[in-house]
Image (cartoon, rainbow, N blue to C red; front, side, top):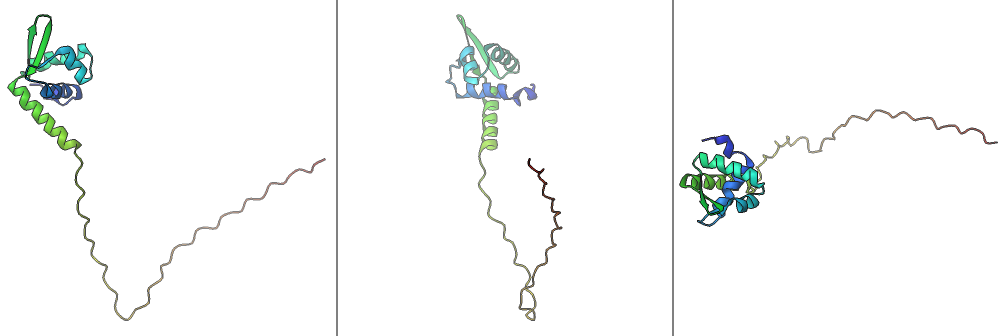
Length: 134
């Protein structure tokens, strides 16, 4: 089986659309529409997935009906679970407990002042001189 085929977006969408379909499956055109791809692209993917044992294709008159094989059901379920896990927002974790800073000895009861460096002096730009008006 070509595993990299299943990790691409459109084949996965196709399998998930079939998973939600009724037991009778879907026509190729309905599956293409539900998966958001062209009929030609869906038909090519159906052929690849069918060759890998994930889909069963039956012709009824002019229609081709596609449904998942038992292996296809397992793979589609695993993909659905994976997408659910990846897209579900995680609960925020508890705020970590930050230990209190060590207390200073009792002899220094006054808070210490913090010294910040002074910014460098800014140069004053000379004002432009206007030419005398005539």
